[in-house]
Each structure stands twice: as structure tokens, then as C-alpha cells.
Amino acid sequence: MTMSLKFTAGDLTIHRIVEQETTFLPAHDMLPGLTPDVLAENRGWMKATGALDDSDTLILAFQSYVVKTPHHTILIDSCIGNDKPRPARPKWNMKTDETYLRSLASAGFSVGDIDYVMCTHLHVDHVGWNTRLENGRWVPTFPNARYVFDMAEFDYWTESNAKAEVPPFVDSVLPVVEAKRAEIVGHDFAIGDHARILPTPGHTPGHVAFAFGRGKDAAVFSGDLMHSPIQTHYPELSAKFDVDQAQAAKTRRGFLERYCDTDTLCCPAHFPSPSIGKIRRKGNGFVCETV
Figure: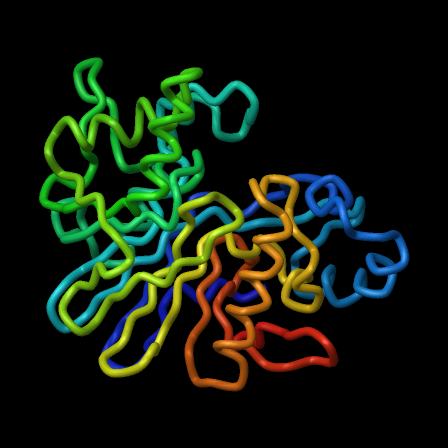
């Protein structure tokens, strides 16, 4: 598969910052509604596009996007992170590699260049590089950035964390708040005329997408609205990690209808390389045609 890492849309430049691209979970485990027949019917193209391996395990990218607008440099979803205790995921647990920061540097950015970090939601693989370990303390990785968290999402995890500690919230979100770098925002949030919030609940209660572009949506960053390209063909297929699977399916179809047959670049968090495409209709579903 091609590793396209740089795209343009209108006056935006978009860079993919890939931390890992690897096997994740068996397709039937990740997508509980996926029947053997539907998988058999789609196995060919999924393997050909690098979305599925020979043992029917989904292949996902774990990445951030950096968007350069005429005025700001904005990072969307900060991936997995280093030195984080994640015992449930061996590939993420206490990682110490330089892949992410090297990828950022090869795109031409230092941590000091980022003006905003915008999180579609606060799951472990979307907040990891929000912070880094410095002298035994978690400090914001991007020292000059304002970190944007949706209010409904932040409230949901605050409540969850009060009942039982949520490690990614404790080590990758709260230190940003304590450092007074957080902006906890409502759905009217915008950065100039270039960046807007699009509520996309289901995966988590406060999950949002971010739409970019002056006067129109030139690009949209969909987070975990969908994890694998098969979910564009069958929007009703929700992931087992979706807090409200019925809501996620409804949100996903609405999102795909909204951007279908437009010029908007759709930038999902986890689709395998080259990840980015334009939404087109296909039968009763859709396809994200890579560009």
C-alpha cells in the first residue's frame, strides 16, 4: 500500500503522523454484527487494500493528523504515547520508541509548532501524546498548544474516573487541565473560519468530528466514527468499543450521507494507508475512495 503522508484541500495542508499500522483484533471480534457471509463477500478487496490479513484480523493505522491552515498548525488526536502503562495492549504498553516524534519531525514540525491539539474523543489511542514524562511528571507534550476537549466527552470521563480510575484520563488529560492548557468547549466551538466541531455521538457520548475549510468543509476528521473501511459499505456494523452501538450506526450513516458525492476529504483515524478518501455511494452503502 502507498504511504501517502501529505494531502492538500483548498488552502489546507494535511499531514498523516503514523505511530503504528498493525494488526489489531479479529474482524468478527471487533465488529460483532459481521456475519461470516458478509466477511467472505468482502475479504478480497479488504486484503487487497491492506485492511485485513490472512487470518481475518483487521489492520488499523494509529495516527494523528496535522492540519496547516493559513493561520494555525493544528494536531488532531494525539495517538498512543510513550511510557504509558497499558497492560491490556502489549503493543502500546510502556512504549519508548521515537516513531511518532520522528514522523512529526519528518513532516516538518516540532512539538513547539503546534497551536492546537484537538481530540475527537478521549480514548487511550487518541490522547497518548497529549503528555510526556519529564522528571517523573506528566507534562503537556506540545508546550504552546491549547488542547480542545468536547465538554460532553470531558464530563463523561470525569464521571467515569470518579467511579474507577481511567488511566488514560489520569495520565494524558488531567495533567493538561492542571497545566491550564485545556479548552473544554461546546458544539459552537470554532477556530476562525477554518475549523468547526461536528457532533458525532455513539462511539462515546461526546465523540466529535472536526470539519476544516473556509466557507465549506474541505476536509473532515472523523475520529472513531468508523474503524475499518468495511463500515462504509455497511454503516450498520458498529465496533464492540462503541458505547451506544445503535447511535453509532445512525451517526455513521448520517455522516456518510452528509459527505457523499462531495469534494470533502474524509480523514478517518484508523483506516489503513493511505487512509484518506472521498465518500461515494455504493449500493445501499458507501465507499471511501482513496485519493
